Each structure stands twice: as structure tokens, then as C-alpha cells.
Length: 480
Ligand code: G6P
Image 1 (cartoon, helix red, strand yellow):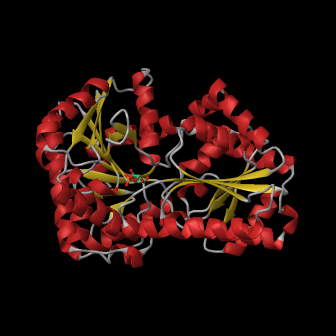
Image 2 (spheres, rainbow, N blue to C red):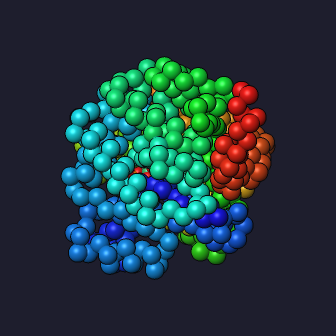
């Protein structure tokens, strides 16, 4: 059996400013699926082969497309999709990132709907479909990812009624009151599009419940035990909290390269407690509140002055979008405010890095940090929180985690905070910095157990197995 992965972005996209001509993609989706592909490559998965179809990340003139396709095929099993500039802008920048992304993260004031961008969204989904159609072979298993491609499952289903299709949403599914802000035609098309899949997977029970409520309000379909009877087939909504590659993170963390990095940074920062904050640049990540909380910590608990360092790492993202430019400026200002107010001859309170780190560099940072500060205002899952725990031994590292991040449902031994309350974050940092080794160990052991027993393979295997089963036992399901 072959696995066809379809996502908006390929794991590496074209970047002519880079020597190799490509750059690594960031975000939880790519990180998680790449880990699963490693399992396929090493033969510990039920798939013999795989193919990844996705956008090349840049519009390329037609005469150059063939060469790029060959490059992707020869070096990786990737099939690039090319979108012209107009479609790319309307689809990716405008509809995906200025309508769906803000709405699904409850930032309705940031949403900016245009009929033309919806048209581009439909058009881009058709372009993806046309490429998939050329690739599908009998017995392929199709796994579609995320909010960019919500119309795709039904497009495939119309022409391939028996192919197995799984859809996974990596971001939250919002409440009906938010979803209904989309024009009705969009609402219906998105939900009908998703229902083309055998399984629609989400990270948490809340997202699954909101989805079922929305389906019933908009399409008048009632799910019985998570299953929607569509007449000739079924579609199941199910919960699969995405895991990490726990073993790989552990291995990287003890590798020579990582240990070296840890040693150098630890030596340099040996006099300080380290608070770590790592994110893709995004207004949903709550970075400003986090910085304000750190500022307050230094004001309210002056004993931490010259005793603590906030290591702030932000990976550039969606730079062409105004709201992202704005949040970047706000972060720069806030860092300036803290460093301007508290720095001394031998101490800078915030060490700020605006760059994309690789996993070895990240694991080195996780491993030397006393506190992991993960305070998104809204987040589908947040794999950083999981990686932070995994990369440390159980007696090291206190995790502070938003109650509005999907990961909190599994990591309930973290210090959970309301990310909108700066005061709560401030107190949580102080609590984390003063927590006894015994308590850290007690909390972290339970989280290690969860992360090692339900990892990225368990996540993918469960999705695949559930998808295999849904329409194969029609007789018993029809009784529902
Ligand atoms: C989030 C989304 C992914 C997306 C990633 C990076 O994790 O869920 O689908 O790929 O952000 O965003 P970008 O817009 O650069 O692809």
C-alpha cells in the first residue's frame, strides 16, 4: 500500500536566495509528518511507499517547472504544485491566512473576506486535485492535511468512490458562532468538502464537538457516535492528538552535536536560570503577553534581576501579511522596552533571535532551559511544548502551558495558565523558577510517560487504522 500525503506546503520549498535553492518548511504539520515518513523509510509502518504532493512555495515560470519537478522527484518523493501569482495570493495569503487562519483561532477582527479570494481557494483546490488525479493508483491511501485543502476530499471522492481518504485538521475547529461568520456558500462547501473523507481527524474533543454541532446546524446532518451517515457511505469525526517522535528527540538530545551545543551555551549562561520561548512568528502565539509577563516579573520580583535570562527565539513566517509585520514590530519594541529598562553592564534580560533553528539547535536549547514558556492565545496542538518535555530528563524543565493550546489536554501536569492574563503568566514564571526538584520530577514523569507511549507513530497508525475501518464494515455501521 502506498501513502499519498497532500498538504499545502512541501517539507522543502523553493528559495532562490539559498545556496541549495530550497529551504526547510516550518510548523507542526511538516515536523510531524516527516517523522512518520522516517518510519515508512525504515520499514516500521504498514506502507511500502509514499508520495508527498504539495505547493512548491513560489510561482515559477512554466519553462522552469519541469526541471524543478525532476529535482523534487529524483531527490525526494515529492510532487510539486505550481500556482500562478494571482491564485497563490488569493488562495494562500488572502483566504487561508486572512480568513480561515484568524477565524479558526478566534481572531475574527483580523479576518478580511473577499469574494475573489474564495474563488482562488476553490481554484487552488482544483489545481491540487488535478495533480492528485494523475498520481492515484489502486489501493493508494490518501491523507490530506489542514485548512488549505478542505474542498479536496469531496473532489477526490466524486471520481474515486472507493479510495481511502483521511483528512486531518492541524488547527482548532472553531465554535459554530465563529464558523457562521463565513458566507453560507463557503460554510456549506467547506463542510461538504470535508465530508468526502472517510475520517476527519482533529486534535481534541472540543474541536470534534464544535465540528459536529456545526455540521448539524449548517447541513442538518446528525452524527451518531461520531459517525455521519451520508446514505451510500459514512464519514467519521475522530480525535487524534498529534504526538512527537519521542525516541528521535531523545536520541538527538544525547547526540554529540547537541551535547556540544548545550555545553557551550550552558557555560556562557551558567550564572542564570533560563526561560525559553520558541515560536513561529504569529499573532496567535501570545508573544506580547509573554513579554509583558516577563517585564512584570522583573518589576514585582526584583530578586530575579541579573539571575534570569529569557531566550526568545522566533522563526520568521508569513512575512508578506500585514498583521504579521505588525506583530513583529510590536515584539521588537517590547524586547527593546525590557532590555532598555533592565539591562546592566553585565546582563541583558532578553536574548532575542529572529531565525529558524534546526532540531539539534532546538533540542540543545530545550535541554539547558529551566522553564519552557508556551503561552499561545489559541493553538491547535503545539508540539514545542511536547518537545520541550521530551528533550529533558524528568527532573529538569518546568513547562508553563496555555489552557487554550490543544496540548494541555495531555500535558495536564504542566503549570497551566490563561494566556490573556499577564498576571497569571507572571506568577507562573515565578512558581516555575522556584519549584522544587521533587515536584518537577513528579510532574514531568507523568508527561514523559504520556509522550513516549503515544507518539507520532501511534497518532498516524490510529488515524490510518480508523480510516481503513470506517466504510469496510458497512453492515454493522448501517444499524446505527
Ligand atoms: C501551521 C499550519 C500548517 C502550516 C504552518 C506554517 O502549523 O497548521 O499548515 O504549514 O503553520 O505556515 P505556512 O503558512 O508557512 O505554511
